[in-house]
Image 1 (cartoon, rainbow, N blue to C red):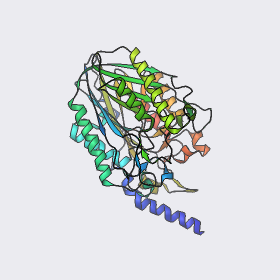
Image 2: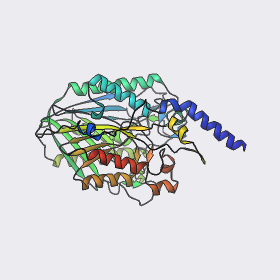
Image 3: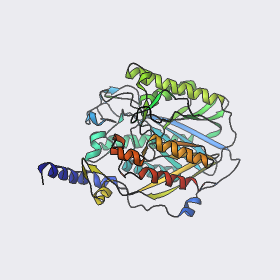
Image 4: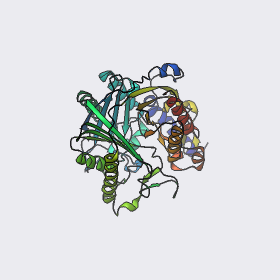
Length: 440
């Protein structure tokens, strides 16, 4: 056995020691009792909808590491380009409540996501299936929120103070949103090709992209917009690894412009299946110019879409979800595959999948980083069943990348960041389709 192989084995054991015990959720079983999940779905046609929204800053102190690029090596941040926020929208039809939460973070590591979701449910009384906790996926967000040797390579040294600060502010935003609910009318609008020419496939030049843009608007009275939800697909990586300032990247510019267009409103951005999609560099000569231009482009397109959509006076809401088994982890350290039992100690073995429907439109949280191929296939299959859908990426935790078998075989960056093997993307898609089929 060569010294190099011995070093890799030692590194493998260190990974298990440092990250194993915190990566696996406390004993949960898969959701096989579909009748039990179906019982969560309550349909009340003609229901009146109420909504409340809140926005709370979550920027940690300067000096806290950034999360997004391993090249930063956990170095301390040097400033704030623009503040980081958590934005919460609370919707209710009198029977069911849905909490939509969007935070300017890279991802919610699984242990942190589980902790936040549990605290929100305990304090608000909203069941787990009624909570969608998503990160915008900015690569200039707060680090120090993940434990374990491997995580600290991306998030920097863990700090319980930073984690507690973010957790407490998320809880505060939820409380505020629930407390300020008012009866609302709402609208929805989508355009399938608005971003054509402005986004690209980073893994396959000229490859498939999702250029759609979707907008939900909630208005308490004519002219009093409470909240706007914007859904688009692109990696927030316009600011590179050399920039050591906190920033929400283009989602921050988008939300700032939308909140200027609708004074008093809160704008929530949700990314889509953005695993291999990013904004094109051609939209600006510098990183700063690209961030501003892409954010403004999205805001102007979203405002135009929203202005053309008629307000609907009623809004039936439904939420449902349950636990599903995950495939055995397939993790490699360089050329060496780890034994599945070691992988099970490093990664979750089950995932809670949930879904919401607003007047038949499905809101689909994605707990993994799906490539465009998988995302567009999922939307197409949902549409074939008669369901319009919004894919809400980086939601309710993070299970790495999900790719097609062909992409997995290619050995691309995305394939290398897939923790559950070649068939994980297909299994996740099938589970989500099964879950959607319970809503009639």
